[in-house]
Amino acid sequence: MHAMVLSARGTPLSLRERSDPVPSPNEVRLRVSACGVCRTDLHVVDGDLPNIVYPIVPGHEVVGRVDALGQSVNGLELGMRVGVPWLGFTCGDCFYCRSGRENLCDRPQFTGYTRDGGFATHLVADSRYCFPLGDVGDDVALAPLLCAGLIGWRSLVMAGAGTALGIFGFGAAGHIIAQLARAQGRAVYAFTRAGDEQAQQLARSLGAEWAGASEDYPPAELDAAIIYAPVGPLVPLALRAVRKGGRVVCAGIHMSDIPAFPYDILWGERQILSVANLTRKDGIDFFKAAAKANVRTHTTLFPLEQANEALARLREGKLVGAAVLCP
Image (cartoon, rainbow, N blue to C red; front, side, top):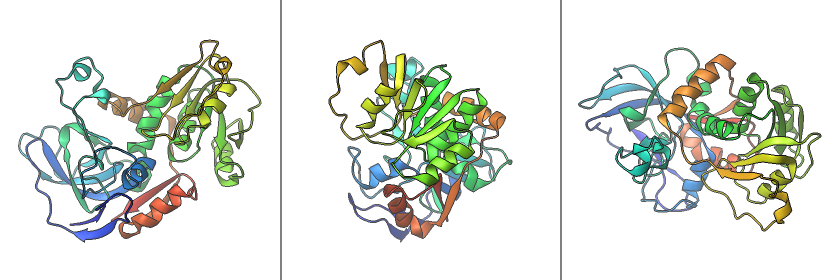
């Protein structure tokens, strides 16, 4: 097998040849056909996340086909197409797992962060945390759904039932969730970097009522806002845009520091919430909703060996939609 390997914090990924991995009990080996490039991959490469053990293979929006089965695997078969998400394992025994909140597990494993991920030709995954994807749809188009879609779905649910929704950061997650929000009858207001006409045009093409810079005021008060960009100063901007009783949902695993802001923009029972990981139920619910809404992803394709280029373009904000690697 071949993999793009991160050997140390902040260094470029390097293409390495490795022995094919052997699945342990409850695990499957996949031949990877597509892997989305997520902003969390940047946080792994840049060392923003704690306790990274090197070397590690990033990538957690994985689509592939099962080509080896470990012992005790149930529900998956050789040749089956499956998706591997960020949440790679939970203990099942801690307070959070026992209370139905496995996304907050005390002893989790995460694909592409604490276990090798999908920037490779093959990977091993816990079969219990894989999602069967069926045979409908293109592998490349499906890949961004495995994190941008799943985390986006959880953030949309946490935003509540309000009809006016702001989306700050209109990239991979934003363009997926805008489609789901519109299918639910919500009005979408898209906030992008100043001057990012491509992202704003994409938002309008997907039915956004308005698209503008993050510093601009939308033409209507928002019931909720979701922040996908890892930029702390967006929090007070979002708070100023939501009405009393509104919610601001921070959807990233990492964000720069939130600056001080006056209490009056939080007052009025406005709320700031964070999203942490996902549950397997989120995946089941999301894929049903995405199919019903006929969600379509906008992707830019890169060969596996150009993973560093894909990450650089994501870091610089030069991607519209999502980047996907194909071995």
